[in-house]
Length: 392
Ligand code: PLP
Image (cartoon, rainbow, N blue to C red; front, side):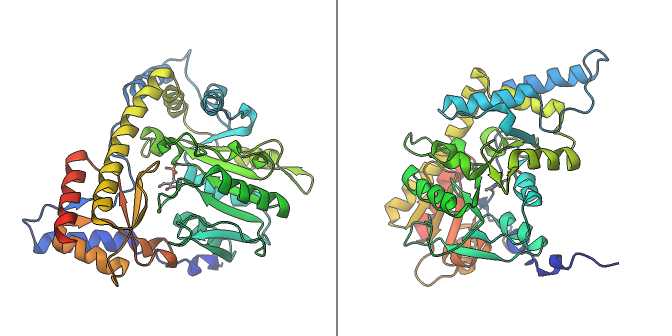
């Protein structure tokens, strides 16, 4: 019996456990300190009224022999796939419901998609990046290449034509940097991918935070993307489903590689290894895309956006360099001169009783940077910026 030894190559994820330990120790030593957490990547607002109504109705259906549902279609119920297609249509992007695969979240899909690609593919990851992309490749024994995101490129790296790639991960609006690709920049990636016959794995989990009309909410707004991109999306940040679990992946019919349809391969993978997201949850997801549901989530998103703007304004006043804060719930700031990400973490905790996330936890290029999030409550966000002003 042998284990998958690739797991031994995973970097131990010390980031959030180390943060938790440091905060616990600090609170024990300083019981009077009112610690504010602006490090969380989880939503805090409850599910909206129409989602709750829909959940209740679906629960009732499940308790009645005439309306009870057992196994559903692995790729999701048509009512939800059509609702997703309608949502994209409202933003001018035409997606056929046959291209939409519903799941229990974007994290699983981003990981599982690797099943349909060959082992020898060259993978390109931005650095810093959402750690799941790296870990899931490491788990299958694949080494990855990096593309540097840094201050010089505003944490929005562009393709280098000399660098070969088969699978390219892009996340916009980005976690952790909050940076958002323009249509022109994304077009460079699409052209690069098409020239190399590569596939872009595009994570759009934060698209709902975009308000700037000129910024792309989907990679399919870019001509040529249907020939080279798979898009992942989630109800987690859009509608507060982090604990309810619902996401979807879009695999255009045009995606053919080695004469095979990637849409068909993903369908085959999902129908073999996944038995569908719960009916109740899918009903709740469909409620998000009704006119009432969309207006309700906008109120929640607006609350987070206002928090982001309070943080960004505070940093502007102090002349601190950052990305994000607009069209994104994340703010990625440069730590003060010569402080590492962890030194700044300790400084903020001790002097301002404030918790954020050290940038180096997302990759080597995150050293010297720090992530704050807009998912806290309003009073605490205002108070946090007052405290930063006093110590900077
Ligand atoms: N993709 C990115 C970039 C994320 O930051 C997250 C969650 O933090 C996810 C995907 C996970 O989404 P889900 O909750 O749908 O699994």
